[in-house]
Image (cartoon, rainbow, N blue to C red; front, side, top):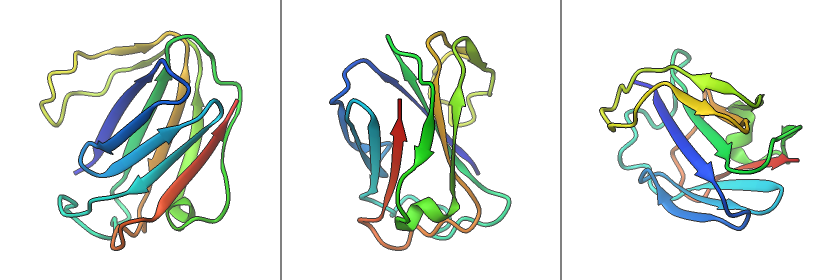
Length: 133
């Protein structure tokens, strides 16, 4: 199964401890660090080729103009990032029955972090580091 998570950021120094019971997410004005803190709910500790986890990050007031992975951290190896342009609409169904109404409009845009097949969730403490402007 694929996990899709949504985050609306209004404070550039936002911290989301134990986000979705997997990651500590720490934002600064131009970066995001996701640190794996719990892997006990992972269906697979190494994501198979046909699986991915997607994290959509939207901003309340700013439009992202660039996004990139920083460094060679463990989770960066199988991660990709891309910009969500202002007005991007996510029409995915609510596979996890979260009650989040869809479609979701990212009126100010944002970015997508995707962890793909090969991602190793065996060790807690590993990170994904993203830089954005």
